[in-house]
Length: 381
Image (cartoon, rainbow, N blue to C red; front, side, top):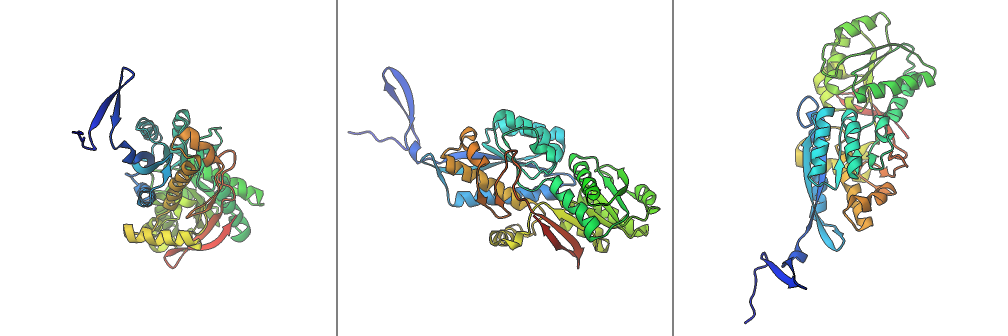
């Protein structure tokens, strides 16, 4: 009588005197591929991080709903999520944990100050890292594993500097930054662009990314009667800065990068948010058919609007999956060359990377707060 084994049983076969395990039914199992994710999920920047995580989960779920086949096996993607707290020290610990867990790619980090030191760990492990970090140094280290999903500070700061001088006709410009890699980096690029467009920065100050009281700095700037105050930092600091500017009678326009372009800035600043500017490294999401559909699905699922760069995290996952399909392998060493030369139409952009891993033809969208929302003013390519 032929004995039947349950499919879950492991049968041991003797082949040439060697005992070899054979999992009956193994051909039916999906191949599990771990995708790493990291952003600040706690602390004052948690709203950015949760937005990024939400979008990443959407991408994982979308891929698993219609499984792709790689190497003859259906792939099941599994998210390994970590909170880096927007802290470089924590970020490197997180990076090592992700590597040790066996992830095949990392989508993150959010902050440049975290991404830059973490990128070496991923490079040493040969694991691709797809990040929205904008400091130019992120892709200037010579690593083949770093990819930027948005434009850099050079593009964003450049667009804002030109806009301040050419469009706003600002004669007196002051700059404040929070001393983080992001804040200082984008402020540096803004200063360069102001000079390149014939303008001049009269004063430059700095603060902490933990501070919410800017009275002393703003009082010292008031005598110069600035037309524009550029702030390199996050919305949680920019909002009280806007309120304090109004209270002190400063008529300057506040201007900053993508971390200002959130509903949180408007909520925290209230009526004092009106008339202030920001720029996002990316195009207008709902101007792309796939972007508009993503926005609707995101809101339906999470009962909130997209905060900022979550859609780029979604695209990051899809880029990795596409590269794996083209390479017919989930192993980083094999699909990395495909990722580097990929041409992919995503939710947020038409993706193609240069030799450094920077996004080619990255648009920059400049917006102003009007009628209690961010209204697009221009899109630079």
